[in-house]
Image (cartoon, rainbow, N blue to C red; front, side):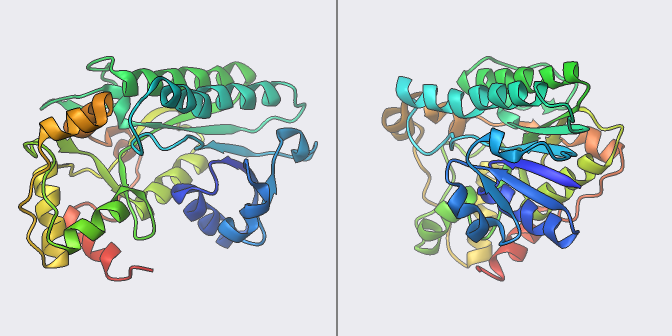
Length: 301
């Protein structure tokens, strides 16, 4: 199978490349820095800087994961424009290119996030539920999904991946937490009661591969473990895994003052459950937070 990836040099993209190379698939990554693709994704992976460079050869699947990091810095007008362009505008470019091809892929798996629902409070969130509120993250994910779904008009099966917080040893939000927690300076965010839908990188890759292969899979899927945890419970679990206290909370007011609108993303949460993935037969390999952290921290490489 020949698979085209966007966002292939990111945390999830690199893991997918390792997984699919081992299975013998042919991989091409569309990247702003194509010269870095072979080093980051594997020497057998081809990097292209323009979609036109792909050529007229067969294309079986597209996995669209590109997007600037959403929680790295405050959401200024300039930052919001970048977040929008890196997701919606890029996906529009991808669809325009696919529309012009004679040979189109069978499936498009397109990124999204559990932020699609907005801050869900205490309610359980399944893929059939509507958004709870329309904050910026929800609007961004909503527009991203709506754009990707237009590929159905091209005869392409579309899967929308609403990913939670990805736990991995070599990147993602967990990497940023390790230093303060190892110094004994970690703790919950705000009151710590907000829900954290998480997923081990191994299951994120496994679920994407499962949805790629399953011809009847389409529409939204919550890519998160079946046992979400509250932020305070996550902080305590990480403290246990590192044998450190986790008692120093990050005050809500400090986040609101320092991060502005972005603080809503950290102080809110979603009790999202992977109902559709489990109903269609995907079996999560790691389902509880203690096992996930033990698995990740046993080998920091």
